[in-house]
Each structure stands twice: as C-alpha cells, then as structure tokens.
Amino acid sequence: MKIVIINGSARKGNTLAAINAFIKGASEKNKIEIIEPDKLNIAPCKGCGVCQCSKGCVDKDDTNSTIDKIAAA
Image (cartoon, rainbow, N blue to C red; front, side):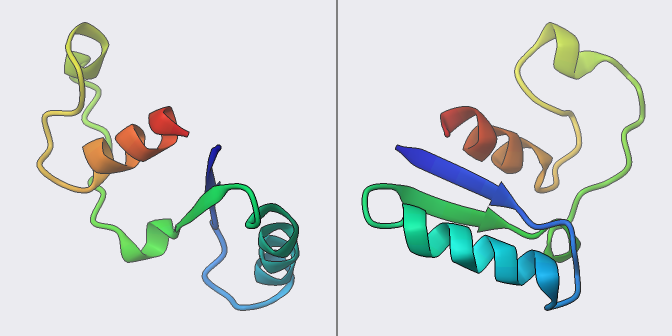
C-alpha cells in the first residue's frame, strides 16, 4: 500500500515525532512518502476552474505532481 503523509508543520516538534512513530509502525509493509508543503513551489489558486474540467492545474508548479502522489496512495 502507498501512504502519503502531509507534514504541514515547518518545526521539528510533536508533529514530526508523531509522523516518525507512525512510519515506524507502518513502513514494514507499506511504501511511505512524506510531503512537506513548505518545501514545494505551489502558487496560490487563481480560481480559474480549469482543474474541474480537465486533469490538473494550469500553473506549472508542484501542484500537479503533489495531487498525483495523493491520488496514487
């Protein structure tokens, strides 16, 4: 199974400790990937609606690859 963890905390505190504890228990039989939004290039949504009619965002940033990783998990 693929598991995607989104770590929304830029600090290395309790959130990271909880993530690491989860990974320790789940990594044996699963493929785990951590996404850290603060390290990605994601532009604010323009509200154009293109993503609702076609696959993906018109912005050429990390949005589409992030969406693909989440959808594959």
